[in-house]
Structure formats: structure tokens, C-alpha cells
Length: 114
Image (cartoon, rainbow, N blue to C red; front, side):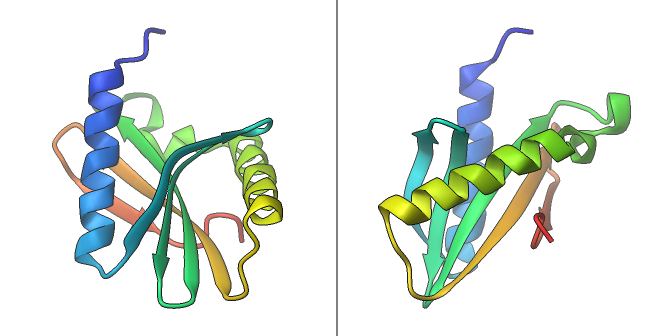
């Protein structure tokens, strides 16, 4: 499957706009480590938020929510642990998902690792 970088970039831009409108500041985008990538790291007061952004053009094959598998969540968990080893944080942390479908509908799912 060919990755459409412009579409992915647009989805991440939309996610960043959503987070900023909800009082978060963006700390990092597309942070890479051995285990994978964290799409967005954001902060609001003492909360450090790790965000997985998923985009699908339509609801075929279960839609965008079905794209976050158990394997993907394990990679996210390991990536967050690596991030925190490199950049210690004394406050709360949370992992969320922002799911975007082709019509621009954005769904915010909190605490995806719990």
C-alpha cells in the first residue's frame, strides 16, 4: 500500500489544530525511536499527552477505529516508555487516539492503553 504523505500530513495538522483548540501545546511531532513513532506529543499543564493519529478515507474494512490493533498499542507503549527515558516527566501521562475519516469527522478516544 502506498502511503500518501500529503494526506497523512493533513490529518496530523488537523489533529494538532484540535489539540491546540483544546488547550494543549505541541511538544513534538513524528518522534521516532527503535520501537516506532509517536505521531504527536502534547502538553497541557502537568499532563503529557501521546497521540496516535489515524486517518482512513472511508469506513470500509471496519473504519479507522479498527486500525489500532493490539500490536500497534504495544509499539505505542514501548515508544512512550523510550520517550520518557530520554525526556523524564514528573506529571501525569496519557495516550489518546485521534481518528479522522475522509469526511473530516474527528473522534477523540482517551486512554487507549488502558
